[in-house]
Amino acid sequence: MRIKMWSFDNVLIDLEDRDVSVKAVHALNGTEITVAFRLGEKQVRGEAGELRKRIEILAADRLLDLASFLDSF
Image (cartoon, rainbow, N blue to C red):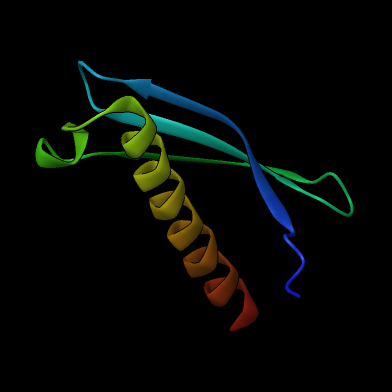
């Protein structure tokens, strides 16, 4: 069974500017990382629950990109 290490604590969406801010908290040590990015026009469409899920997936991808970059040093 895979242990969930990060949980998304806070997801803020500015629908007018399409800016997104997601706070992720590490389960073991409590480290907090805030990921901020802007959505495209088509990405904002849909129901709120589905939009949140898509945003969390995008934020997780950005966290993985960051981790991969830091791992290369």
